[in-house]
Amino acid sequence: MKTRALELGFLRARIYAPAPFGGSMLLVALAVQSSEEGAAPAGFAEIAGFARKNYYHEAVIRLKQLASEIRKTKGASKAEYRIFCNSFINPLGFINEKTLAADCGLGLIGKNNLLFTPEAGSNVVLAALALPFELKGDAPLSKQNFLSCAECAGRYCVQACPTGALAIDGTLKKERCLQWYLSGHENHVPEDIVKLWGRRLYGCMECQRWCPHNKKSISTIDSKIGSLPRFIDAAELLAQTDDEIKIRFKRTALGLSWLGPSALRRSAKISLQN
Ligand code: SF4
Ligand code: SF4
Image 1 (spheres, protein in one colour):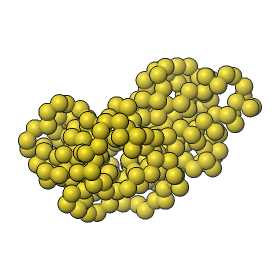
Image 2 (tube, helix red, strand yellow):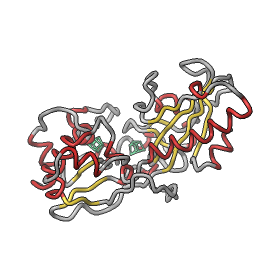
Image 3 (spheres, rainbow, N blue to C red):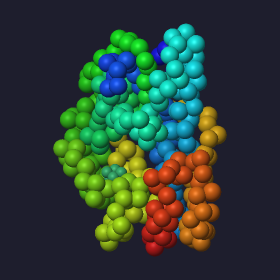
């Protein structure tokens, strides 16, 4: 099953057992576009690489195919092969894919609270497929396989964070984190955060960009789902209605219901200010 997952384009696959809802789970990582140098030109706002294709949807499609293949030999109803991705897809229950992924050796959780795979660092999206039967679970990775965060001591991620959101002990102050606001949280953005916002429409990757785990060159999957340009004309976006924005980003990573037009409009407005 893990081999088949790799054939379907996943970078890494592990089994977690026993699973929270019984049976076992296949945890997978899909490689995504890493961060790039250079800011958006004046008047434009940037979409980070991980959101420029709908990698979440891509992971779900690939897991659906795998589930259908497994069902042919193992049986059980379609509903028993539940898929979890970004923990929003499945209404039947919330799971923390990151914690489960670390527990079964898909990667290690770094000081910047992200899961690092040996092959692609944190340039991955995670997804999981619930399996209605027991399999032997995989063991967590040995820390010896990695440059430890203790050794690095936040030299890159903590120091690279423009807002001081990451503490040296790995604690994240979400009220200081750009990604928190870019995801549409809070009605008010503090003035000092506005000044450090840059020209971001969605995605802050500073704490990932300089991490040694993310220096490997990786090939991402060839996905056509939800392709978006790197830079978007901020004024043009601000001139659009909610419905027009919804249509524009439908089926893309920016079209997720929890993000919404008002969050994108706020990001575009701040980008123009900067
Ligand atoms: S920059 Fe250093 S401390 Fe931060 S996540 Fe990477 S290895 Fe860990
Ligand atoms: S996402 Fe950005 S603001 Fe948040 S901790 Fe990382 S570097 Fe800091």
